[in-house]
Length: 403
Image (cartoon, rainbow, N blue to C red; front, side):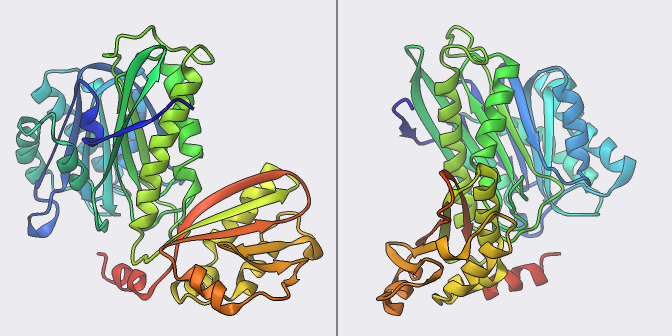
């Protein structure tokens, strides 16, 4: 992994990238609800979308536009997901792309679209038509924070990050913004993420790097076990670093892959930390599994267990809930080989409460803002990890009044 220098500026830390976020009339109260990310030159484009079989109209439009392999702008709305809105929803998403393309004087096929918010309601297109020219005029090389605010729904905080690494002897910048706080589950979540880099890279290499980066970041987090209809990660690579173009498997590809995953992980952890009602972030590590799949399945089962998550909310060292989730996961488990730790405190050895394990120490580990749960299955050498958060009463309150 090349040495990473973390930067300020989010997605607009990347040369040639401008961004904006404004209130366009979708949300009540004047909160930002439209965002735009723009590359001054055409960029190689890649995407990963939700695996939910019901998908938003913006995804359908963006899939078509991505067939050209290049993009120059990403327009997004929040407060309305434009999902389950029929053919009108597709026409509205396409019109958003057309209006932005006209204002930027670029082909409509180079505009990608994303939306997040309430499902089943038509977009207020009269308001959006009036707002989009203002959004384009608001583009700024310091606009990352405004764009990050424009895609928020129940997020307490905007999420942005940027880094610089050296690849092939040249400094390369990567930056991004993201949103997500609820309906967050592995294999994509109620989340949007827009990434950019000035690296020159082949489109197929960018797509491969993005898929792997998502697998190691956004597909390794969970807030509540629900999977959205609108999840989207876009990546733009505008080539302004003027390096020799990186090819899949060629020199520099692995370094870029690692840098992209590092950036995506930082943004993904911001999502978990901002989970609806969350008071702590939790890393679940499973090792000693017979296969990587078993390690992943076991870690996911623990991270998604409502009983585990509510115990974490109450700082209750009820280790039996972890063991029960593990046994029900479908992974190969032999009870007398299982070991469990809360932080540095070993709780279980040989499938039983460890002699000398102290409840006070367990509770102290669970009271931390960053909690580590470690499991050793004692059956092999495979390992995996999932990040999650606790589940509090505030989560219920937020989601009883969301619409």
